[in-house]
Image 1 (cartoon, protein in one colour):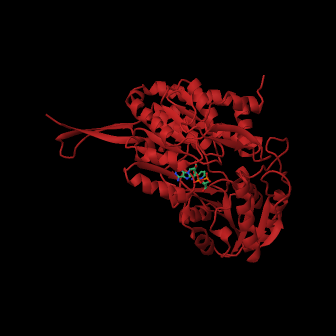
Image 2: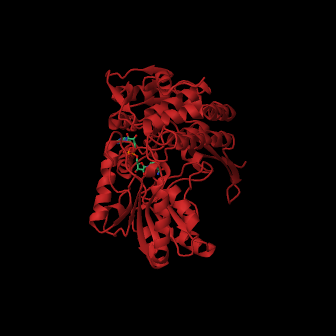
Image 3: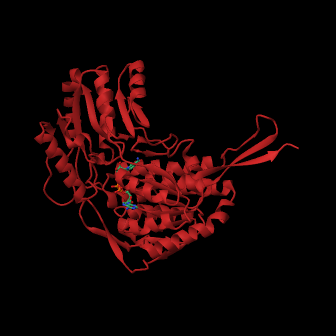
Length: 487
Ligand code: NAD
């Protein structure tokens, strides 16, 4: 029989889990988690601080050698079992995620499938960690090159994909043999606690993954960084916080992986199939209500097709149903918090003040919950804040261009370089534009690039390193080489 969301929440632990035990915060503090569709409090969790952080990192350091010695096949099978359990329980986890984060159930189901897939992918990678043996050029030395777990890792994730952003880190860390301390986003900790429970049921030994929820991230993360016991920090979140953490990590020369903010350009050439382009724009813009680092932030459309493209896009955007993500027929849920709506309102008002035309949406609805309607803005000027700021909401900003050179110039005029999108029926042109775009990933005639089997990540101020794909596990491995004289 399926459980209600309150039964699922009641089954989760306190919010601090160290060495196999749920704990209250050493300070006794708690914090509340709410449902963004209603503003109602749905859970109260332990609010961790430095004392809890110290206890967690001590355990991660103490357990590292033992965990690294567990055979790869065993680590692989824990991941595989976790993938299977998450797949069986997808409906429960999707409901929990929707209740704390707001995304419609269909999207939450999609995220559970995507997030679980990282466990399956890294279950397969765990047993294929490569090594190398060769002879030095002068023939006098044998080199034996191995890859070892980097050591205890600090994991930090945002609220927008509360499951996939952490399974993308936990999967390769388990596969590589690293212990972990993890601080989830304070807005969406419940999904993380559910995933932790599944991993324990799948056989993850006590102490390999400790979790400390908190509303004061610095009070937990900085002690971890300065403990001298962590060897790596893997962060997904905004660029300003990423920069701060890079500075902090420099003190102990920790290895870092940084999945940071984006400002994706979406280029529609005049030879694009406009139906394909509109489908792709809907996916790239509206996935997660626009609250995605991969969201199309600036939609650059060749002037000759702008009227057709904007009419088709506006028709699709206007037809979307906005409401509680848990209700049938909802396409667009609430944004994650009231502050998120305030920011979208500010960006739209600024664009309109600078001459943009509102083709649909454009104003905050009254009533409970943190809602904002699907909005299309045309003729957005280059000076508008929306051109340089992550919108993180359901707002499509259309900008005309006349030549490919102009499109590339606008597209690359940002300090971000996560993902770009190109719509063209000419393969040569599409490839040439893709090569000229400063981004870690390009979607050519598609609005969706995320795939556990592909290397996800950005250049410029969008980050360092890649998650998923064949190289994802390397982020959690150190190379060691043995020199052996030939005698
Ligand atoms: P955020 O940077 O505010 O928070 C991310 C995480 O960092 C949270 O867990 C937060 O508690 C923690 N944090 C905040 N201050 C900290 C500090 N001083 N020390 C340690 N940790 C701290 O980001 P957000 O609002 O949660 O998420 C949205 C951002 O994440 C957007 O910029 C988005 O583009 C980015 N993002 C990037 C990717 C990617 O893969 N590149 C994926 C998803 C989201």
